[in-house]
Each structure stands twice: as structure tokens, then as C-alpha cells.
Image (cartoon, rainbow, N blue to C red; front, side, top):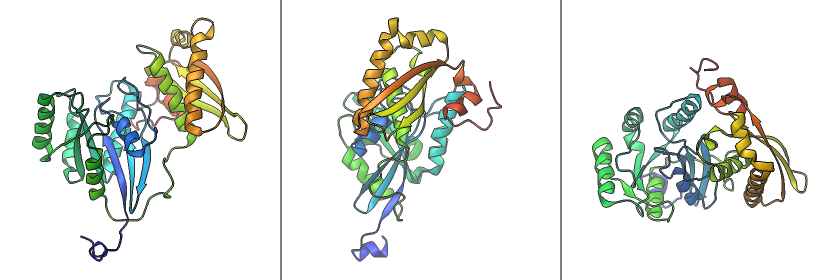
Length: 310
């Protein structure tokens, strides 16, 4: 115990907490639940999160910077390698690692290389089994035994969607934060600019409205954001990989595109608290998920060993 704490003097604690796990384990839902605000987009589809999203929770003498990371997987193409790079970088940089396991998928654990990395930082690791409201007892037990075997720790049971066990989990996180000054101003909620979240809300709407491969082949770029205007003018371009995907997004006589614009605009207005004019376009950027230059243009981090376009 710190001397200041023993004397009854409040000591500030702050740190970075990385939320890691396989795709669709509920990392984004947990981040939003902790903050009481929707920062990370959430859909029923896996691999929705592509870039790390940082949300800040400041309460009393503690400040926690939660990092929602892309789902851990075995990368198949360059964009997935970029996502994996984001997730593994968060493991190295965080003060606390919060591993989420899915109670509805008992056999699904992180890849072997990630498990080895987590084992090397077991003193900073917390394991939580999410979706206990939907999981089976045998699945919970399987994950609990796996955590004990791999890391020598007891897993916590939570449901991020139904606010079960989150108080206990949050207290465990706070207890592992190192002493130190706050990393951000007390009233900050996020690290990313508003443009990033606007693009994410548009992409979330695409995931909600379209089927099969189309959502995964889309990337959103905010080309213009005129905040001083009323309504706020936003020009956004949805990039797809093939012309056929462009046609699907637009729909007959532009009907689907119009619906997409309305639904996305409503989300953006709720997020920003301002009236918005959303000027939405669709362009084809052939094979962008597998090209280094395209990833760079769209703002995604490029793996250093990409070797240019692949």
C-alpha cells in the first residue's frame, strides 16, 4: 500500500486497459457499458471493429483508458493483418489486459501466439467470461478451466449487454491500475476525433442493412466536415471493392442509398447533438482490402512487412 493511501490521502491512479478477445465476444458492448455512451459500433456480425477505439472513464481518483481492439484471428488478407497488428500492439502497450471469452462458444479461445503473449503478462491479466445470460453451464466451466490452466487465474462471470457483474469487474480493473496522474483532462470521453465516430456510425448502418460480403468490403472516408454550418455539412464516401457491390448499396432508383442516408444521419445527429446534412456517395476502390496503398489512403495502419500492394 502506498504511504499516501495509508495516511488517508487520495492517490490518483490511471492506466490503459486493453479489451482483447476473439471477434464478437462483446468487447465493444463492454466498452459502451463502462462509459455509459456509445463509442464503439456494435453489430451481430463478427469483425466489426477494425481499429482500436479508446474511451476514457474518469471517476474520483481513477482514470481508465479502455481500448476496444479488433477481434483476434488468424489473418487471411492485408486488412485483417492490419487489424491483428492493432490488437497485438494494444497487448504490449496496456497496463491491464482484459481478456473476454464468449460463454456461448466454449471451444473458442485466442490464437496460440496471443495466448502465449497473454501468459507472459499474466500479472496484468484479468479474464472475464461474457454473455453468461445466454451461455450454458458446461461452456462456462470449460472456459473457467482453460483460464486456470493457461494463466493460473479465476475468471469473472459477466454480461456486458445486461449489466451483470460489471461492478465487480470494474473494481478489479481499478485495483490493478498503477499510481500516477491522469492521462487526459477529466471531462474527456474519447481520444478519436468526431470524424472518426461519424464514419463508424455510417459503417455500422451498412452492417445493419446489407448482407453477405458487402459490409466487409466497405470503408467510409469523411471528405468534408463543415461544423460551423447549420445543419452541419458532412460529405462521406463509402468505398467498395467491386462495381456490383456499388449497385447493391445504391439499390433500385437509389432507394437503398436513401434509406442508408436517413438511418445514418439520425445516428450522427444523436451522437453530435446537432442537425446534420449528410451528403453520401459510393465509389469503387478495387480490391482495397488487399492493397497497402489503399489501406493507407483510407486511414488504416499498414503492416510494416506488407511489401506494397499484394
